Length: 338
Image (tube, rainbow, N blue to C red; front, top):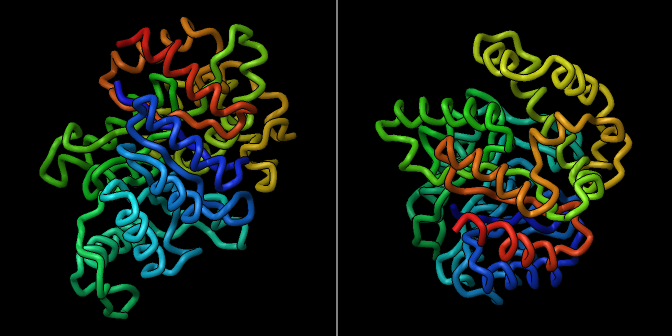
């Protein structure tokens, strides 16, 4: 199994780069950076510092969007990070989360996201690229940079399976992971390939500690965020696919997700102690987080491995000592799994 870490929510740009350097030394495959202009330091600045200080780890957003940054500006930024890193950057992109909501906008249609992926590939490869009726090109970028789409919903999972090089799938419960992977596989088939042709990352919070109760408090808010997005992207909809996923989850968990939709506070987005996450059940938290003693964390990862999951992206936003957690996970959990 390959591992990545998600950083940047509560760190300075230099601290995020230092953490990427440590992950590089410890053998992590990937380091991702949050892009939310109201909540954290600039993602491109963090990625550039990280690129200059690492040797082998891949670097990208998880995730950005083409609406708070102009399409050409975003493509040029990622291509620059790719140059600084010696070809280790990727574009991690979605339809829009906190960055879009906090400037008063809504997630964009998936057709627009697909159009942007096509633009990005043309622009960064040096070809003429079209965006919203404007034809343009880069005078210097000349490399095919991987695209990873972050997704919750059925349609976006299929889109990722059809057009992306990889996908981020929030949710560490086997029921959620199985449902999302099935949708990605459907999209891959539509694109004339298989799910194994993509880098498929299951994504969620991690906190390794011998005290499971303590660990749970640090992943609680991230679990609330993921539950909120899954509800508004899938479970609030009356479709056969939504009913399929809902039927696999406990009714009390579904009720909790519905309540989150009414009280979610963007300015407490993934903040430890967020009021909207205060009374979440253990059952809901475990859908989106792995926490507790090393043996417990390893058992959870083995459950995912049994489904075919071979890449896990671990979010550290709520962890006080992120360097220590990065090291402890590698030494005490990943090492158990080989």
